[in-house]
Amino acid sequence: MVFAWGYNNCGQIGSGSTANQPYPRKVTGCLQGKTSVGITCGQTSSMAVIENGEVYGWGYNGNGQLGIGNNGNQLTPCRLAGLQGLCIQQIVSGYGHCLALTDEGLLYAWGANTYGQLGTGNKSNHLSPVQIMADKERVVEVAACHSTHTSAAKTQSGQVYMWGQCRGQSIVIPHLTHFTNTDDVFACFATPSVMWRLMSVEPDDFLTVAEALRKEFDSPETADLKFSVDSKYIHVHKAVLKIRCEHFRSMFRSQWTEDQQEVIEIGQFSYPVYRSFLQFLYTDTVDLPPEDAIGLLDLATSYCENRLKRLCQQIIKRGITVDNAFTLLSAAIRYDAEDLEVFCFRFCVNHLTQVTQTGAFWQVDGAMLKEFICRASRCGAFKN
Image 1 (cartoon, rainbow, N blue to C red):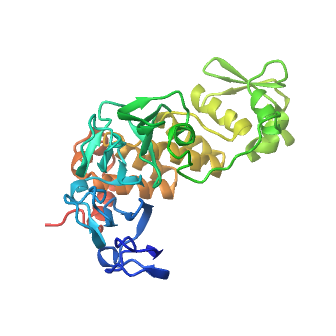
Image 2 (image 1 turned 45 degrees about the vertical axis):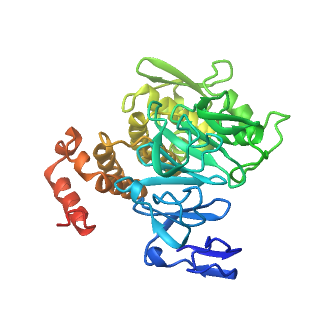
Image 3 (image 1 turned 60 degrees about the horizontal axis):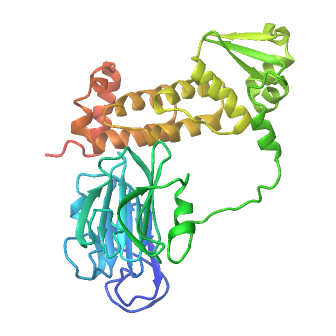
């Protein structure tokens, strides 16, 4: 459910009138009975994303920032027909424009474009969503702020682009920056300099325990144990493994053979997967492509590492495509990753026609295929 209150001169509260709202009021209309998973506000407009990826907008629409094909204000939520057939994962609003990111990493923009903030290569407003950055790799994050005319996006490989009003200049196409996150774009180039989301800042004038531990991973100088995986060594410290992992705690305090060894052979998992697991114990982070993350999810399940399972699921979610969706769904079911299973299932249903044409779909066993069809049917995927 979405609640709104405050100034309402343009209908941005979604109450059906322009009367100010002094206390929280449930936004109904087209949102009645729907579960919202994301909201964003422009200067005098509001947007919401519901769980099936549909987008609704209401409020001021003088520049087409509601994306409904006209520039008339809306006093109640109105669905964006221009995004029909797409499953929106994230939406952000600038002063008078919006950006929407699909679950396949496609980016759409609409609304005001005085400073090139839509990234279309010109300064013409758009009343309906248009795709941008189609020639770039998959986008995983978009950014905008209600007080600026600046836009930013981050790709799967970590590249950060910016466009729109940047230090008084109008950049009409996405420009590759040297930044590693979208927050720096707004801190350094937006007018005014603002943060587009909440941020925690900590001093970095000393080496913390976590940073010192990170530096010692795979360090032959201080390690007292080696793992041999695919004929490659990974250097670690028994104390760290015992502190961080119940599996190793049991291994090194009992009568396991490995407790007396200086080199432990690993044959069940690949080198990239096992190295990432050990590195996770030192850094609490994971850096793997989605394909390898499936193997790491298998390891995390075997070793009962629940946090690692969640991180693997996040990586897999960001890397899901039509081609690998059913493979990932199968893995989620096999490794009892319920949240990932729901995510992959919804993706498959939202892209049912394309998914059922892939090789992965026809390689699954009959029992799972029947179960998927039954679940999809209950969700209304096969309506006449």
